[in-house]
Amino acid sequence: GESVGLHLPTLSVQEGDNSIINCAYSNSASDYFIWYKQESGKGPQFIIDIRSNMDKRQGQRVTVLLNKTVKHLSLQIAATQPGDSAVYFCAEAKAAGNKLTFGGGTRVLVKP
Amino acid sequence: KAGVTQTPRYLIKTRGQQVTLSCSPISGHRSVSWYQQTPGQGLQFLFEYFSETQRNKGNFPGRFSGRQFSNSRSEMNVSTLELGDSALYLCASSLAAGGHGYTFGSGTRLTVV
Image 1 (cartoon, one colour):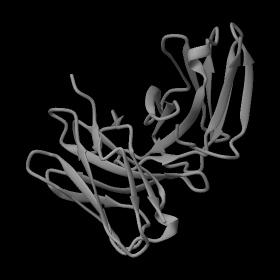
Image 2 (cartoon, each protein chain N blue to C red):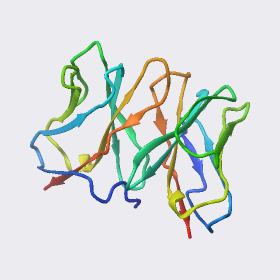
Image 3 (tube, chains in turn blue, yellow):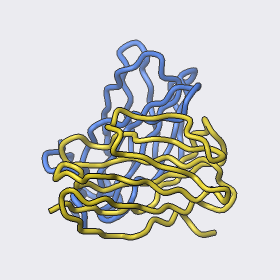
Image 4 (tube, chains in turn brown, red):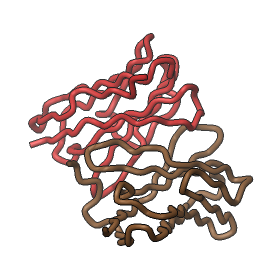
């Protein structure tokens, strides 16, 4: 499959453990933040989003935390499964436009 | 419901040639955006189209252009290809301009030799 990043930071997680992926964003004017998952040979897949007026949002097995004070975003995956192995990207956007600015990505490897 | 369809899936071109990539958005989606993904630069925004009009453009040279048709299908063109244009080109569609419910296609892998 296509390589999405030769030198991505990698998080190795034991199956069943929780994963935490971190992201520092750059634009304090961004009001919308999204996490994407990209598997080999596929495009990014939406996981969860959060608006800047929130600090936490939960989905199915995932939680996104937003700390605007330090411009930090995190994605928590509960009970990590082999199917969670992928590259994870955070992205930020402003309300006025549709442009997404992506972070560099983190590779998650789930060990059985 | 069909997803975002990008064609071709793989493409090999020679330096100096031009290339056209195609994107068919999800039915009903009127906004189409294009991104370039490389190992070195990551995912970078190219441009966004809504109702056949370019709404936003990233920091790419004029060799990169696009258009959108009345059925919302979009094409992007790269002229005078350079080795550095080798990348995965991703198209994403959403219902409305400024909407953030992007759905990405699987991309077109362009290799310039």
